[in-house]
Length: 139
Ligand code: UDP
Ligand code: MG
Image (cartoon, rainbow, N blue to C red; front, side):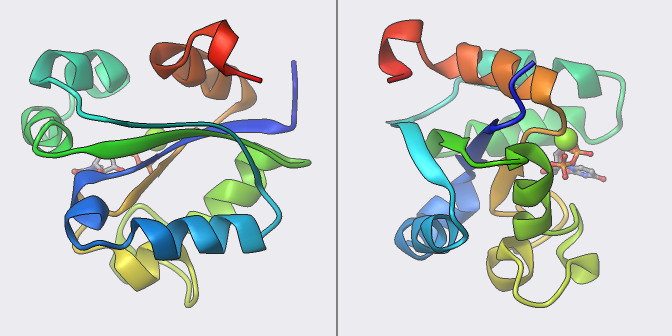
């Protein structure tokens, strides 16, 4: 399994706050190469499918509402140890617990509207990348 690919989304709150440019700059300066990028908007159903693993969690309904509330930017990124290094760059799920200088510390509003998604394993990075991009787009 490839260890050099991760999948990420700039979430609706960061898009609405016009932080996409600053976030992409941080990603590139951290050494990630953008392999695919798409501005899109999820329907409530598609958001539910993407976060199906959280179906039983109390925040699932609100999470689907939030993730379908505005445009997002989906990206496939390449770097050695991409998944782990990207999770370090974005910081903890709850921005109050995120380390200084991380994307969530700088840009997240709350534990829900936390600016950025990052895949949590090499396997999920592939599954999530395939959710948004056809193989033809992954150049
Ligand atoms: N989330 C939430 N409330 C919580 C935990 C998570 O609204 O108590 C949202 C938040 O947007 C988070 C997403 O659900 O990013 C997925 O949760 P996960 O535990 O997978 O966190 P992540 O992997 O994004 O850090
Ligand atoms: Mg997660």
